Picture 1 (spheres, rainbow, N blue to C red):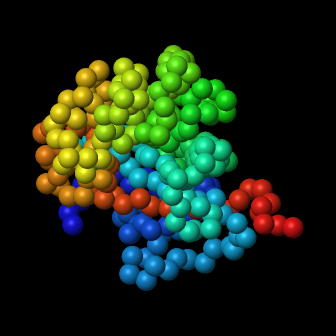
Picture 2 (picture 1 turned 120 degrees about the horizontal axis):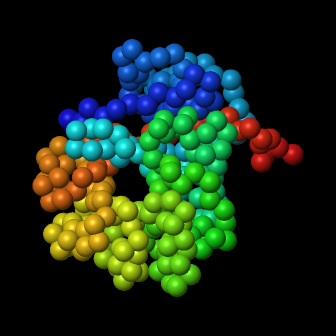
Length: 260
């Protein structure tokens, strides 16, 4: 499958993160603590064993010419087992968001996983209404609101306050739900899964663009689809045509929760 010439980020030399599932090491990359996976064998260089590791999914968001503007960061379980966070209780979803924010903005800092690009992170209602704290880095953090978050008065007021503080807002998986439409005037980005476009067509695109938000096409699998999305008004793209989601790991800086 052809792919865009996407920019690749190599972590800083003293960064504790290990990148898994990356096909090849870019030619001429600077020495780093990053461990690059062999695409054929799946093996990596020896690394000090850790009883527990923080894990983080990362996928780039790019322009039509492959320039990276940001990364979406996703929760990945330390157990390495697949999880469906969208089916969790609100309290557990809060914990997943906290884990991602801590991985991205804690420790060695956002530059170690995103360089100078934006960090898109799914956040729960608790973060939007101020019940839980956000990293004090509004210039870098884009708050993705998933479709399960209701646009009640407290959420709308919270979103307005967050934007006033400099945070950017993205509506994730936009399908035209009433709560999503209520959030449109406050959105800097609207992300649409191209599979939903096959069901709702250009009407959904026009609705998403009503207030001038930047449109992001998700799950773009090939260049032909990317070109169609660009012609339809999308200016940012995310999916396997750019790069599949990779998994970053780092040794925990605190004792393992399994330790007795």
